[in-house]
Length: 313
Ligand SMILES: [Zn+2]
Image (cartoon, rainbow, N blue to C red):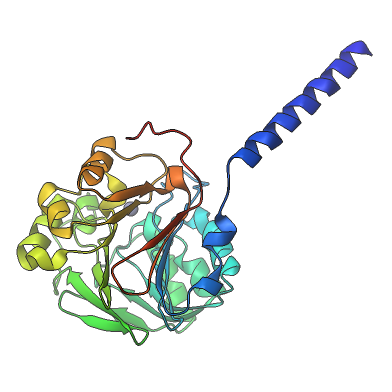
């Protein structure tokens, strides 16, 4: 009996201390996914995705234009759909006007089939790159079944995101040539042909370079030089050391960088951006991240969690 009481007391103490710890860590999820603050602003919400499979969780960014259009760039692996769904529901969104696939890897198009089945989709925007895997075929089947228009993009294309935001496609060039044996060993080939999008709203700029590696970065820097400059950068390839080369970092020269990853891909890449003076955030540590602007080149940044230590700096 004594043992039993001691166990109960221990359980109570543990429960209380967990509650206290949970309270100590502020969670601004509701604030980040509150759409009432969006009118007149270009807002990007970088999701913290939790993988429930062997695949890495991947990227997902939900953008709203100043006049209320919705764009989703990438949508994690299939097991992260509950995270994407929760965010869209919290925002009160039932329609995605622009669903963008940066490239057809499973950690980017994983939840597309589920989004196409559960949401009203204006059109899917993607490059011409084809990738014959089961996830890709599944998503293509749902695309056809739901009669969703597909718009193929290549370097030089541009379109409007709502009335006020211009989206320019900086990469990849048209007419992708596949090597013999494709898609065997195609990870680099595919990542280097990610869609690279630059969004401009008056004096504010955002760059979404997918999973491009340094080879593609070299091409893009060569083609665009300083035109690559963007205030807000989604770190290429989840902040891994395959990417974010010096010429690229210096050409983009961002104020805010967001890395979407399950951990910290490479501390050196993080520190390189910090040295440039960029506020550098990692979804695995900071949780979801909101970056928003009225188009004046200044940005409101909200992270879901506070950093409890400064070990990264
Ligand atoms: Zn990826």
